Length: 269
Image (cartoon, rainbow, N blue to C red; front, side, top):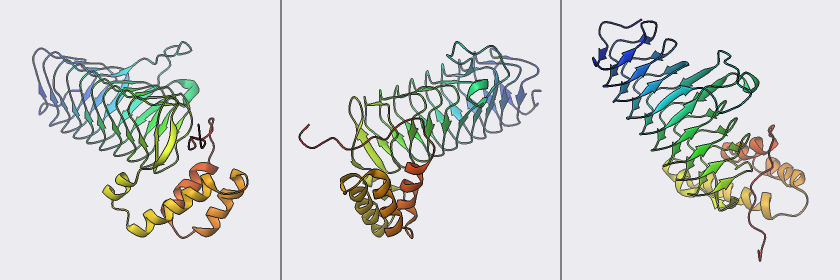
Protein backbone atom coordinates (compact mmCIF):
# COMPACT_ATOMS: atom_id res chain seq x y z
CA UNK A 1 0.00 0.00 0.00
CA UNK A 2 1.43 3.38 -1.04
CA UNK A 3 1.33 6.10 1.58
CA UNK A 4 0.04 9.43 0.35
CA UNK A 5 3.09 11.22 1.77
CA UNK A 6 5.59 9.17 -0.25
CA UNK A 7 7.15 10.91 -3.23
CA UNK A 8 6.82 8.64 -6.27
CA UNK A 9 7.95 9.78 -9.69
CA UNK A 10 5.28 9.35 -12.38
CA UNK A 11 7.57 7.14 -14.47
CA UNK A 12 8.12 4.67 -11.61
CA UNK A 13 6.21 1.37 -11.72
CA UNK A 14 5.09 0.50 -8.19
CA UNK A 15 2.83 -2.47 -7.54
CA UNK A 16 -0.27 -1.41 -5.58
CA UNK A 17 0.49 -4.10 -2.98
CA UNK A 18 4.00 -2.76 -2.24
CA UNK A 19 4.48 -1.17 1.19
CA UNK A 20 5.86 2.34 0.70
CA UNK A 21 6.23 4.34 3.93
CA UNK A 22 5.65 8.08 4.33
CA UNK A 23 8.76 10.07 3.48
CA UNK A 24 10.13 7.54 1.02
CA UNK A 25 11.24 8.84 -2.37
CA UNK A 26 10.91 6.64 -5.44
CA UNK A 27 12.77 8.15 -8.38
CA UNK A 28 12.32 7.93 -12.15
CA UNK A 29 11.92 4.53 -13.81
CA UNK A 30 12.18 2.50 -10.61
CA UNK A 31 10.28 -0.82 -10.50
CA UNK A 32 8.91 -2.01 -7.15
CA UNK A 33 7.28 -5.43 -6.79
CA UNK A 34 4.22 -6.47 -4.85
CA UNK A 35 6.04 -7.97 -1.86
CA UNK A 36 8.54 -5.12 -1.38
CA UNK A 37 8.63 -2.95 1.72
CA UNK A 38 10.33 0.47 1.60
CA UNK A 39 10.73 2.29 4.94
CA UNK A 40 10.56 5.97 5.75
CA UNK A 41 13.37 8.14 4.48
CA UNK A 42 14.53 5.66 1.84
CA UNK A 43 15.58 7.21 -1.45
CA UNK A 44 15.66 5.13 -4.63
CA UNK A 45 17.33 7.56 -6.99
CA UNK A 46 16.36 6.14 -10.38
CA UNK A 47 16.19 2.87 -12.36
CA UNK A 48 16.28 0.80 -9.16
CA UNK A 49 14.56 -2.61 -9.22
CA UNK A 50 13.21 -4.06 -5.96
CA UNK A 51 11.78 -7.55 -6.36
CA UNK A 52 10.64 -10.42 -4.18
CA UNK A 53 10.03 -10.26 -0.44
CA UNK A 54 12.53 -7.47 0.10
CA UNK A 55 12.51 -4.95 2.94
CA UNK A 56 14.66 -1.80 2.87
CA UNK A 57 15.28 -0.10 6.22
CA UNK A 58 14.90 3.55 7.10
CA UNK A 59 17.21 6.12 5.55
CA UNK A 60 18.83 3.90 2.93
CA UNK A 61 20.00 5.60 -0.25
CA UNK A 62 20.02 3.43 -3.36
CA UNK A 63 21.75 4.64 -6.51
CA UNK A 64 20.74 3.97 -10.13
CA UNK A 65 20.58 0.47 -11.59
CA UNK A 66 20.81 -1.42 -8.32
CA UNK A 67 18.88 -4.72 -8.28
CA UNK A 68 17.58 -5.81 -4.88
CA UNK A 69 15.71 -9.04 -4.17
CA UNK A 70 16.09 -10.85 -7.46
CA UNK A 71 15.99 -14.65 -7.38
CA UNK A 72 19.10 -16.50 -6.16
CA UNK A 73 21.75 -17.64 -8.59
CA UNK A 74 21.20 -21.17 -7.37
CA UNK A 75 19.78 -23.91 -9.60
CA UNK A 76 18.07 -25.53 -6.60
CA UNK A 77 15.87 -22.48 -6.06
CA UNK A 78 12.29 -23.34 -7.04
CA UNK A 79 10.43 -20.12 -6.29
CA UNK A 80 9.94 -20.64 -2.56
CA UNK A 81 8.97 -17.48 -0.60
CA UNK A 82 12.38 -16.43 0.72
CA UNK A 83 13.48 -12.93 1.75
CA UNK A 84 16.05 -10.16 1.56
CA UNK A 85 16.25 -7.92 4.64
CA UNK A 86 18.28 -4.70 4.34
CA UNK A 87 18.84 -2.67 7.51
CA UNK A 88 18.71 1.08 8.00
CA UNK A 89 21.05 3.80 6.75
CA UNK A 90 22.89 1.84 4.09
CA UNK A 91 24.37 3.44 1.00
CA UNK A 92 23.94 1.14 -1.98
CA UNK A 93 25.72 2.39 -5.08
CA UNK A 94 25.21 1.80 -8.79
CA UNK A 95 24.80 -1.75 -10.15
CA UNK A 96 24.79 -3.45 -6.74
CA UNK A 97 22.97 -6.80 -6.68
CA UNK A 98 21.59 -8.45 -3.55
CA UNK A 99 19.69 -11.74 -3.91
CA UNK A 100 16.92 -13.44 -1.95
CA UNK A 101 17.75 -16.35 0.34
CA UNK A 102 17.09 -20.01 -0.39
CA UNK A 103 15.11 -22.57 1.56
CA UNK A 104 18.22 -24.70 2.09
CA UNK A 105 20.21 -21.74 3.41
CA UNK A 106 17.73 -20.52 6.00
CA UNK A 107 15.50 -18.52 3.70
CA UNK A 108 16.86 -15.04 4.42
CA UNK A 109 19.68 -12.89 3.08
CA UNK A 110 20.41 -10.24 5.72
CA UNK A 111 22.30 -6.97 5.41
CA UNK A 112 22.87 -4.95 8.57
CA UNK A 113 22.79 -1.22 9.20
CA UNK A 114 25.05 1.66 8.24
CA UNK A 115 27.01 -0.08 5.50
CA UNK A 116 28.54 1.13 2.25
CA UNK A 117 28.17 -1.07 -0.82
CA UNK A 118 30.12 0.46 -3.68
CA UNK A 119 29.63 0.09 -7.42
CA UNK A 120 29.02 -3.44 -8.68
CA UNK A 121 29.01 -5.22 -5.31
CA UNK A 122 27.24 -8.59 -5.20
CA UNK A 123 25.70 -10.07 -2.05
CA UNK A 124 24.71 -13.66 -2.81
CA UNK A 125 21.86 -15.74 -1.43
CA UNK A 126 21.73 -16.48 2.30
CA UNK A 127 24.60 -14.13 3.16
CA UNK A 128 24.56 -12.66 6.66
CA UNK A 129 26.22 -9.24 6.65
CA UNK A 130 26.68 -7.20 9.84
CA UNK A 131 26.58 -3.51 10.68
CA UNK A 132 29.00 -0.90 9.39
CA UNK A 133 30.40 -3.16 6.69
CA UNK A 134 32.16 -1.66 3.66
CA UNK A 135 32.39 -3.54 0.36
CA UNK A 136 34.45 -1.66 -2.23
CA UNK A 137 33.84 -1.68 -5.97
CA UNK A 138 32.95 -5.09 -7.43
CA UNK A 139 33.55 -7.03 -4.23
CA UNK A 140 31.64 -10.31 -4.46
CA UNK A 141 30.11 -12.52 -1.78
CA UNK A 142 29.10 -16.01 -2.87
CA UNK A 143 26.17 -17.73 -1.19
CA UNK A 144 26.07 -18.39 2.55
CA UNK A 145 28.93 -15.98 3.40
CA UNK A 146 29.00 -14.37 6.86
CA UNK A 147 30.57 -10.91 7.16
CA UNK A 148 30.66 -9.62 10.72
CA UNK A 149 30.40 -6.02 11.92
CA UNK A 150 32.73 -3.32 10.56
CA UNK A 151 34.66 -5.59 8.21
CA UNK A 152 36.12 -3.92 5.10
CA UNK A 153 36.43 -5.79 1.79
CA UNK A 154 38.60 -4.28 -0.93
CA UNK A 155 37.73 -3.82 -4.57
CA UNK A 156 37.41 -6.86 -6.84
CA UNK A 157 37.83 -9.35 -4.00
CA UNK A 158 35.79 -12.55 -4.07
CA UNK A 159 34.67 -14.57 -1.05
CA UNK A 160 33.97 -18.30 -1.42
CA UNK A 161 30.64 -19.75 -0.29
CA UNK A 162 30.25 -20.60 3.41
CA UNK A 163 33.30 -18.49 4.35
CA UNK A 164 33.24 -16.24 7.43
CA UNK A 165 34.85 -12.80 7.61
CA UNK A 166 35.36 -11.76 11.24
CA UNK A 167 34.49 -8.42 12.79
CA UNK A 168 36.85 -5.51 11.99
CA UNK A 169 38.77 -7.62 9.47
CA UNK A 170 40.31 -6.19 6.30
CA UNK A 171 40.35 -8.04 2.96
CA UNK A 172 42.75 -6.57 0.43
CA UNK A 173 41.68 -5.71 -3.08
CA UNK A 174 41.62 -8.50 -5.69
CA UNK A 175 41.97 -11.18 -3.01
CA UNK A 176 40.37 -14.58 -3.38
CA UNK A 177 39.15 -15.64 0.05
CA UNK A 178 38.32 -19.33 0.52
CA UNK A 179 39.14 -19.67 4.23
CA UNK A 180 37.73 -17.91 7.30
CA UNK A 181 39.33 -14.61 8.30
CA UNK A 182 39.69 -14.02 12.05
CA UNK A 183 38.33 -10.84 13.65
CA UNK A 184 40.82 -7.97 13.20
CA UNK A 185 42.71 -10.03 10.62
CA UNK A 186 44.16 -8.48 7.47
CA UNK A 187 44.40 -10.76 4.43
CA UNK A 188 45.56 -10.37 0.86
CA UNK A 189 46.52 -12.47 -2.10
CA UNK A 190 45.35 -15.26 -4.38
CA UNK A 191 44.44 -17.24 -2.36
CA UNK A 192 44.22 -14.88 0.60
CA UNK A 193 46.65 -15.34 3.50
CA UNK A 194 46.93 -13.48 6.77
CA UNK A 195 49.33 -10.57 6.45
CA UNK A 196 48.88 -9.28 9.99
CA UNK A 197 46.18 -7.36 11.82
CA UNK A 198 43.88 -4.54 10.78
CA UNK A 199 45.33 -2.17 13.38
CA UNK A 200 44.30 0.91 11.41
CA UNK A 201 40.71 -0.31 11.51
CA UNK A 202 40.96 -1.01 15.24
CA UNK A 203 42.21 2.51 15.89
CA UNK A 204 39.42 4.02 13.80
CA UNK A 205 36.84 1.99 15.71
CA UNK A 206 38.10 3.34 19.05
CA UNK A 207 40.02 0.36 20.46
CA UNK A 208 42.57 1.55 23.03
CA UNK A 209 46.30 0.87 22.97
CA UNK A 210 46.08 -1.87 25.59
CA UNK A 211 43.52 -3.82 23.57
CA UNK A 212 45.57 -3.48 20.41
CA UNK A 213 48.72 -4.70 22.15
CA UNK A 214 46.82 -7.65 23.60
CA UNK A 215 45.46 -8.60 20.17
CA UNK A 216 48.98 -8.46 18.70
CA UNK A 217 50.36 -10.72 21.43
CA UNK A 218 47.46 -13.13 21.03
CA UNK A 219 47.98 -13.17 17.25
CA UNK A 220 51.65 -14.15 17.71
CA UNK A 221 50.70 -16.89 20.17
CA UNK A 222 48.00 -18.28 17.89
CA UNK A 223 49.95 -18.39 14.66
CA UNK A 224 53.62 -18.56 15.68
CA UNK A 225 53.50 -20.42 18.99
CA UNK A 226 54.36 -24.02 19.77
CA UNK A 227 51.91 -26.91 19.65
CA UNK A 228 48.76 -27.54 17.65
CA UNK A 229 46.17 -24.81 17.12
CA UNK A 230 43.74 -26.13 19.74
CA UNK A 231 46.49 -25.96 22.37
CA UNK A 232 47.45 -22.43 21.35
CA UNK A 233 43.82 -21.31 21.44
CA UNK A 234 43.48 -22.67 24.98
CA UNK A 235 46.60 -20.77 26.06
CA UNK A 236 45.30 -17.55 24.54
CA UNK A 237 41.92 -17.97 26.21
CA UNK A 238 43.62 -18.44 29.59
CA UNK A 239 46.03 -15.53 29.14
CA UNK A 240 43.56 -12.98 27.72
CA UNK A 241 40.18 -13.96 29.17
CA UNK A 242 39.69 -10.38 30.41
CA UNK A 243 40.27 -8.79 26.98
CA UNK A 244 37.03 -8.76 24.94
CA UNK A 245 38.80 -8.10 21.63
CA UNK A 246 40.97 -11.20 22.02
CA UNK A 247 37.96 -13.27 23.08
CA UNK A 248 36.26 -12.27 19.81
CA UNK A 249 39.09 -14.03 17.96
CA UNK A 250 39.04 -17.08 20.23
CA UNK A 251 35.26 -17.46 19.99
CA UNK A 252 35.44 -17.06 16.20
CA UNK A 253 38.07 -19.81 15.87
CA UNK A 254 36.11 -22.14 18.14
CA UNK A 255 32.80 -21.44 16.37
CA UNK A 256 31.13 -23.67 13.83
CA UNK A 257 32.49 -23.31 10.31
CA UNK A 258 32.52 -25.13 7.01
CA UNK A 259 35.96 -23.71 6.17
CA UNK A 260 39.47 -23.71 7.63
CA UNK A 261 41.22 -20.43 8.59
CA UNK A 262 43.45 -18.04 6.72
CA UNK A 263 46.91 -18.29 8.25
CA UNK A 264 50.15 -16.36 7.69
CA UNK A 265 52.31 -17.33 4.75
CA UNK A 266 54.89 -19.97 5.69
CA UNK A 267 58.40 -18.58 6.17
CA UNK A 268 60.41 -18.68 2.96
CA UNK A 269 57.42 -19.39 0.71
